[in-house]
Length: 124
Image (cartoon, rainbow, N blue to C red; front, top):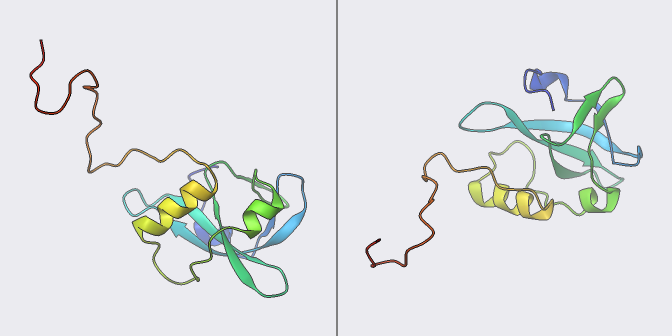
């Protein structure tokens, strides 16, 4: 998705699944704590006014609304953490797992590229 979009412009837009079926309306947008880039949207779905969190990264914002490249059933089964609250790292992890998305590298943890040694053994 475009990263230069004003998150407020997403609120109130229709949301569609991968087959073009309307699943609801964007209720809130959540920004990444480190970058400030829009990362998740809460979509108000169905008669029970439940919010389903959807990832913005693989989604597309088109003239008619937000198109999410996942099946309607998967979106509707997404965890609902309630809107208006900060997403914890654990909640984000649940969302990444739910959508089978690759986790972004953690800025606090350096990437371990030394795969050839067991802990406690010196290298060659």
